Length: 137
Image (tube, rainbow, N blue to C red; front, side):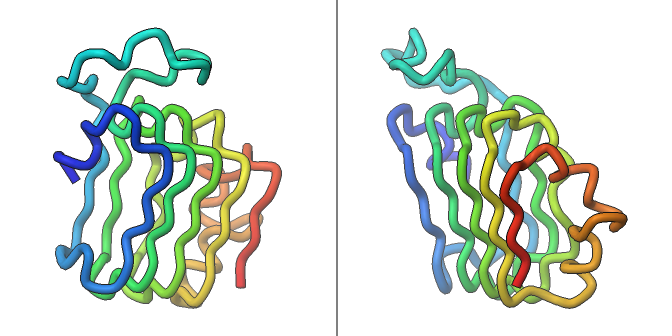
């Protein structure tokens, strides 16, 4: 993740089966160390934090992932997030509440406990309630 989040022009990322084997994943808030991405590139100043221009992220079949942390300032342009078949994931990252560009969240084939946390009234609902489209399957 530390390498991927520094790619200045990465707009879409899908992490699939066996692409991440750890049980904890962190998306940092530090500015990219790669120069040349300044000015927002037409994306409203989306050059700060890790994954500076990422618009779409899919976590698919990440079998061991239990905890995902997103630091404030990470993924400032994220629009769509898909979490599919991450059965051990225990919660939604607190940092998602700070990503004001995030409009679409799809959560499919996760634990019943996680689905309950994300639903209205659940423990993690405050982290996602700003998103206009939330689909939980």
